[in-house]
Amino acid sequence: MKNSATRSLLGHARPHRKALIAGAALSALGGVAGLAQPLVAKSFVEALAVDEPVSRQVLLLALLIVGGALASAFGMYAVERAAESVVLGARRRLISRLPRLRVADLDRRPPGDLISRVTADTTLLREAATNNLVDTLIGSVTLLGMLVLMAWLDVVLFLAVLGVVLAIGVCTALVMPRIARASKEAQEALGELGSGLERLLGAIRTVKASGAEERESAALEGSARGAWQAGLRAARWGAVAGTSSGLVVQLAFLTVLGLGGARVANGSMSVASLIGFLLYLFYLVGPVAQLASGISGLQVGTAAVRRIHEVLELAPEEGEEPAGSGDPAGGRAAPAAAAAPAAAAGDGGAEIVFRDVVFRYREDGRPVLDGAGFEISPGGLTAVVGPSGTGKSTLFALLERFYDIDGGSITVDGRDLRDWNPAELRRTIGYVEQDAPVLAGTLRDNLMLAAPGASPDELHRVLEKVRLTALVDSLPQGLDTEVGHRGTALSGGQRQRIAIARALLRRPRLLLLDEATSQLDALNESELREVIAEIARTTTVLVIAHRLSTVTGARRILVLEDGRVRAAGTHAELLREGGLYARLAATQTLGTAQAEAVAEPVAGPVAVTD
Image 1 (cartoon, rainbow, N blue to C red):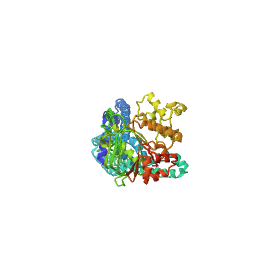
Image 2: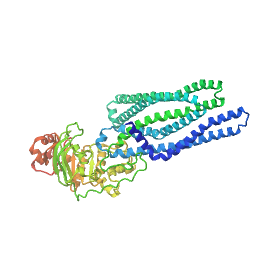
Image 3: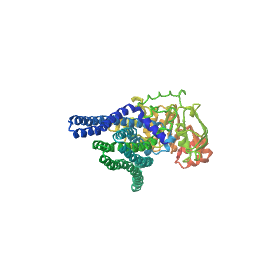
Image 4: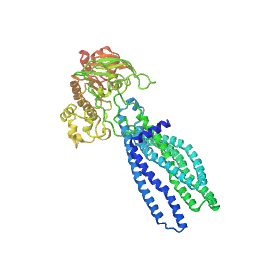
C-alpha cells in the first residue's frame, strides 16, 4: 500500500516534472553557493594568517550570497507554480469523477467527507508532490555534498559526525510511519467533521424548529475534538522528527569541538580547517532540517493521496469516463467524448417491460423488489401505488439506471436496460424526484439544467404549461433571479413546478413523476393534471402520488406490495376487486369521484402514499 501511494504521489508530480526539475536545479544552485561559502571563508582565514589581500575572497563571498539567494528565490517560485498546478490537476480529476460515479458508490460516502477529499486532502497533496519532494531531494544532495567536503577537510572528524547523523537518522526513520498513520487519522477525522457540518446545514430549519442546536453542536464538537486529537498525535511525532534535526547538529558540534580542538592542539589539523569544518557543521542545520521536513511531509502526503485515490479508483458509470482521466495528475484534460446519439426508437412514448426483477440496496439486505413484473405500452398515463417502502421510487431509480438490478430484466423499447448507455438512456427520460430539488443559481439555470440548448420560445411554452409565468413576472430579475441555496427562496409548490418544467424541456419519451404534485394546492394540481394528461397523449408517463385526484385520468394502475405487482387495472376495476387497492383507496377522500368510478370504468389511475 505504501509503495502504491508513493507511486501515485509521483504520478501527480510527473506531468509537472519540467517545472519541478527547473525549480530543484535552481534551488540546488543556491545550495551549491552555500556549500562553497565555508571553503571561501577558509581561504579568507588563511590569507589573513599570511597577511595577503582578502578583497577577492570578500567579493566572491558576496557573489555567492547574492547569487545563491536569487537562485533559491527563482527555484522556490518554480516549485510553488508547479505545486498550484498539481492541486488544480487533482481537483479537476476529482470534480470530474464525482458526478460520474455510480449512485450506489456515492450512497456509501457522506458528502462532507467527499468535500474534504477535494479541498483539504488536495492541499496536503500540493505540499507533498512538490515542496516536500524537492526538499527531500535537495536536502539529500546538499547533505551528501557537505559530508563529502567534510571528509575532504578531515576524515576523523567526518567519521565522528557521520556516526551521530546515522544514529539520529535511524530514530527518525522509526518515527515516520507513525506520522503517516496519525496524519491519515487526522484527515479522516476532518472528513467526519465535514460530513457533520453538511448534515447540520442541510437541515438547519429542522434543527432550529426542533430546538436541537445544542445537541447538534455537541456532536460536531465531538468530531472537531477527534480531529484535534489526531492532529496532536501527528504534531507530536512531527515534533520528534523536527527535533532530531537540531539534535544532530548540536551533538555533532560538541563532538567536533572536543575532538577537533584536540587535533588542533596536537598539530594534526590546522585552525583554518577546523573553522571550515565548523562552518559546514552550522550549514548542516539547513539540509538536515530540509530533509526531515521533506520526509515528514511525504508521509502526510501519502496519507492524503490514498484518500484521493480511493475516489479516483471508483469506476464511473458505463460510458462515463471523465475527461482527462488518463492523466494521473489531472493535467490538460482530454476532449470529452461526443455524446452518444439518442435511441432510434421511433416517435411517441417508450415501451417499458419489467420481468421478475429482483433488487437489493445492500448485498446483505432484503430485496426491495422481489420478482416484480409488468408491461407498459407506449404513451398514456400509468400510476404506481402501494404502501410506503414497497419499492415504488425504486422502480424509477432502476429505470434511470442509478442502480443495476440483481435479477430478472428490464427493457425499454425492447432493449435490455443493461445494454443502454446510461447517458443515452437518460436523454429519453424526464425525471421529477420526490423532493423536487432546486440547485443554487438562477431560475433560468435550474430550468435549463437538463436542456441547455432549449430556445426562448420552448422555455416560454413550458413555463405557461406549468403555470410559472406569474412567478417569473413577479421576480425582480425574472428568469435571472437567484433562487437561493436549495431553492430556499421558493415555496414547495414552486419548486415542484420548476422540476416538472425542467423535465418537460427535455422533451422526454418517458416521464417519471414521483409525488410531483404533493405540495400543490387544489387549483394548481387540477391545472397540472390537465398538462400531464396532454403530455400522456404522446409520452409514456409513470406517476406516483399521494392523492387520488392527481391520477384519476390514468390508463392503468399498478398495485405494488412486498416488492411485487399484486394487481393492475383501472381505478374502477381495482375497486371492484377489493384487496389492497380498495383498502388504500378507502383512506382517501373520494367523494363523488368514487361513485362515478364504480358506475363507469374510466381511463384513470390512482396513486396513494409512498
